[in-house]
Length: 387
Image (cartoon, rainbow, N blue to C red; front, side, top):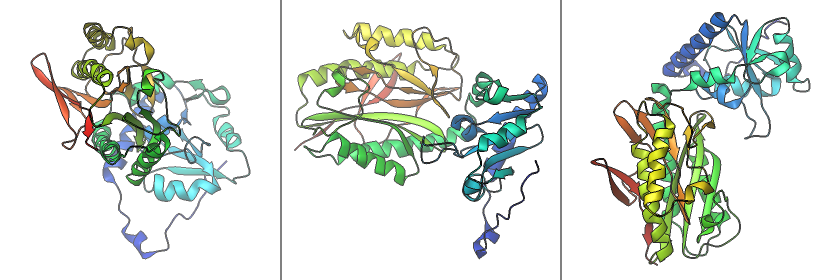
């Protein structure tokens, strides 16, 4: 099968002045080189990439999902010397004009009515091929690809900082504009609108009204109206990179049970944030977090829901549990989201050589400064709206 030749030129005059993202081109070349080194070392002829996380990583931000999770639109067949995008004719223009324009990818396409898997299988046949899916007898090397994705590169961390600011603005703007009686679903819809508007794709939204989180830690939203307070939590992707944050808002005087839970939650959140230090294994961080649960009288709360996730091009690829031995390093991002009773906390931090950097913070939201080992960690407070 030969590579299809297609005219991808834009007939408009603006095409003559198309701007190429040279930083992204360089990043893709670096990632391709890492894959090429792996292929040569392990004596594979090629690597087949089909999973969205690895697709986004190798392309430095492109997407191969059709409107979310309704289907995959393309695969990448990588050899030491070439990277070939495999797709149907219905997707070619979008890929080569918006997703990987001038990024050094070749093309193999088939008509949309012919299965893409047949073309991919043809490419793999008779070769020793690695993959991220085990497709058609290929060797699944997903763990090795995760090692390539982490720690995040400087290119990734710059994007993640931008993502953190955009997500924080969207959540906080939604929270500040709330009025009593709006439903959880309406609030989730407004937040989604803000995220889409600024180039983020919502991956997980939670609006927990009036203590709902006390019973349902992984609640999303429904038609229930918010009467006194709520927590708004979101995980979103930006150029394939994941980021998460949560905020709590209350009308009038906060109920005593909310304040009591919040007093524990801010200390626990501050511990997770501060102790996410380079060269620490996750269980060491977890031990500090668990100690705060015990000290604040919320000892059993941690057993009700997950506490944190490593965030990168995939959400939750590395579990954060009491026995986690994964070693943090500069360039690792962690989304801490402990919960106590009705309170849902949430901030994404970046591990750096100097310590931790909170990516989801702003000067427009009240904070509670928590002293940890002589340093202050600013944790988002409850925003009180006087109605």
